[in-house]
Length: 125
Image (cartoon, rainbow, N blue to C red; front, side, top):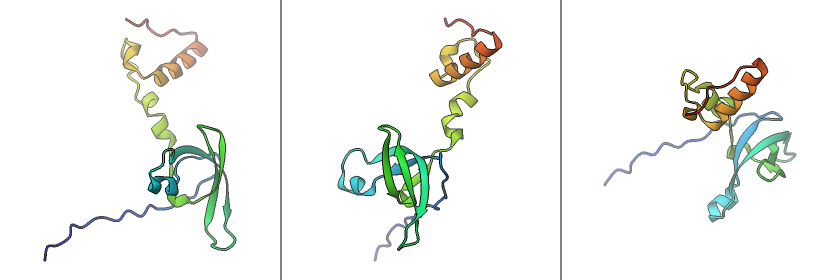
């Protein structure tokens, strides 16, 4: 009898989120039905404990449409860490004379802070 390949079950560790946390959420019903719009970025607005199950659920604001989503199961949420969002700025090649080598977010951040100091970026070639 051929042995089935081992698959590693990945049960995510459910994190506890606080108001203002940025998360990625998947609407599991839409996902399994193959419907569009099943995954979105949200901001945690509040958490609460379900009266019957005792499970902590979350209310989110879907950022793309500023739409409220209530009773979200944290098993279908993942944190969006600030370090990931800020990676391009943190790793911007500041020693490069050509700002074209930087992402637009890094250039915008740099321009904002240099204006405060009265300094200018080098001209793009």
